[in-house]
Amino acid sequence: MKKKIVINEYNKQVEREISYTPFRYIVAIFLVVLETLAVIAVMTFLTMYIPYFYFAVVATQIGVAIAIINRKDNPDYKLPWLFFVMLIPIVGFMLYFMFYSRKLNKKQIKRLDKLTKQHVDKDDTTELSEISAGDALIGSQAIMLNKLSDSHTYANTDIRYYPLGEELFAAMVDDLKKAEKFIFMEYFIIEGGLFWDTILDVLMDKAASGVEVRVVYDDIGCMMTLPGNYHKQLRKLGIKAVPFSRLRGQANNEFNNRSHRKITVIDGKVGYTGGVNIADEYINRIVKFGHWKDVGLRLQGEAVNELTRLFLIDYGLNDKKADDNFADYYRYEQCEQDGYCIPFGDGPKPVYERQVAKSVILNMLNQAKRYVYITTPYLIIDNELIEALEHAAIRGIDVRIITPHIPDKKLVFLMTRSHYNRLMTAGVKIYEYESGFVHAKTYISDDETAMVGTVNMDYRSLVHHFENGVWIYKHAVIEDIKRDFLDTQEKSIKFELGMLKENLFQRFVRAMVKVFSPLF
Image (cartoon, rainbow, N blue to C red; front, side):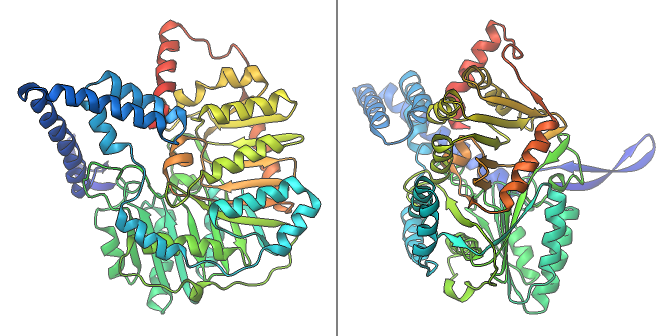
């Protein structure tokens, strides 16, 4: 996070803003490193000084390799772990035992079982029948998404699209000021500044007037933006706050299973989601990587209940004292609107047995008739998604992808560009947003279906993190999403084969980056 200090400069006192990591996080990271090194050291010592222990190590190494091969995980994710286990004795399989698992612990699973049983009480028969009558394949997409995410299909929901974070910010503040019953907010990143300070003023006023206000923020996502005890500070202001998956310094899967969700729910009547975190670069109040291109959705209608449910599950998972009856918060305003939508969640096993968002993207690519347009900040994908993009383009589908031209992370940018030539060879059109950084996550197909939410095309989003999105069918808002994509494309550089020239060393670096990209 940041703080202001006063220093002496040329015999004058000057105020500077510096970044620092709160002490609690430093201790937690130190404990993770210490625990990891200690376990590896003990194993190395036993190997050197206890007879025949070396053979046990070799047997373990082989057993772990077989276990990795037999797991149901994506082969692309297995490859770097096999590399570690087989080529780095002891260290490899110890890192596997500590960090490979993405499963939650038993207490979390037990609590989740209780929380996830609180469904939205709804019969989807009418909506699914209407969709299937118009297009059986699209109907099957909706049915599959409902089953994978344990969500529902909704009609009569007003959806507004905001092509910039600034526009979403203004609308959100206006709606927050109208809250009468409750406000729920969950974000990966919250940082002090105009955006958060404006919202916090509203939240404090509402809490003082009797409105129930709750906030969930990801503990690692806010490591550099909030004090280590920020949830306690908010509680003193009358706001019920919890960090998601609090970092405790345990060498396990703490660094996976983060909440990358962005959700605001106001009185159960209005809901917001999209790519926008609560920090000033998202509304271009400050400039970090050129112009920040982000988008969001505003839902009004029965579909907001799904966002309410996702929030209450995440809140209950992290506040052990929470004992909510979700039905008390399921309420909505009836809206007359054409089209359908499915707000959904995604995340690691065992919360979600299959990759929800990835399934939506694959269906969109495999069933498209004319085009698929995608904006994503990162393009770090497995071979299955690469082949789906290629096959769609090869069979004549107009596949276009817009990524940033100014990167926020240079190594990730290198990984993203490593796929360009292969995709362009198959006919996929690649663009980079010349003015800055695209953080939007939008997927559109054939003027009929779209998905907007928090899901990047990378392993973090598709495999590790808790995410959320909104699948949309035959809704007027799809035209707004398409128009914004084409407008963004006009401000982007189109890549052609041969533009990314590489020498031998650069090709080697890109090859190594692709091997280990599933770990990022």
